[in-house]
Amino acid sequence: MESESLTRAAVESKLSTTMIRTLTTCLLLLAVQSGAWAWTVAPQTAHVESGASLHATQGGISLSQATQIAQQQYPGRVVRAETVERSGRRIHEVRILGGDGRVRTIRIDANSGRIL
Image 1: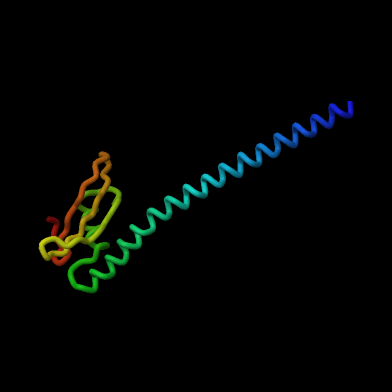
Image 2: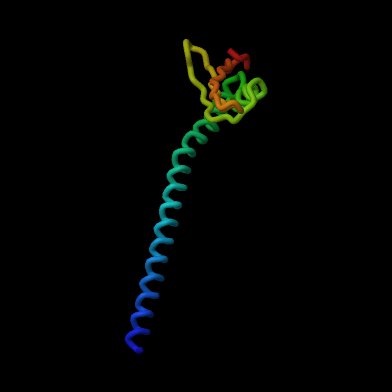
């Protein structure tokens, strides 16, 4: 009887250890994935914010204002926004995911605020 209870205690201990390892592994994977997602999103967000403040001081409209203009014309979720230079002109490019599942790129003249 004593050896049976000893064996039972060993099995319960083994199950408890296995459950703790499994839970720890799951939490670790979740933390790694969350950290990786945050790392990939943060630089883009930082770029958009710094670009907006930089271009607002040069005259014309900011990237933030261009995003608002684009969303008024094409409702949806902004998935990316950046300022580029083409042929000597600053252009705000705003990508919007519409309700129909399509991603549209809206180009806005950074000086005039006009949709191109």
